[in-house]
Length: 111
Image 1 (tube, rainbow, N blue to C red):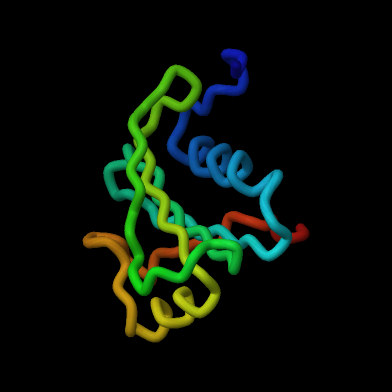
Image 2: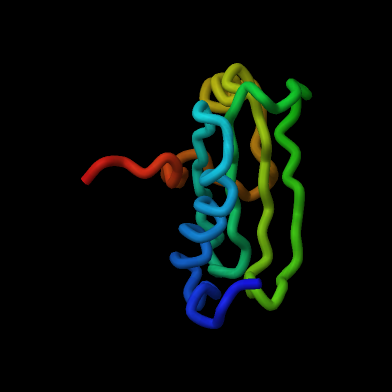
């Protein structure tokens, strides 16, 4: 169980925390992109890895709030090839997700 200090209090902290939770024990090829929610209430991530099954779709899996994570979240799991198709405009992201607003959040870039 998370301590009070571990619970994200801001939207930016929530994005970093969820990316870290999903990335820390994942396969080495995992790349995670965040797509900001203009209202700052739903953490939206696209996770790219070849360990995911290829589905030909970009389906968001929603999760509700919890005591440890007081934000809603939506996560899309795609293969590297499906990500290429998303970037090429051949595969669509969920409605209201703007490809131009993506930000890489995992792995962390060296400073």
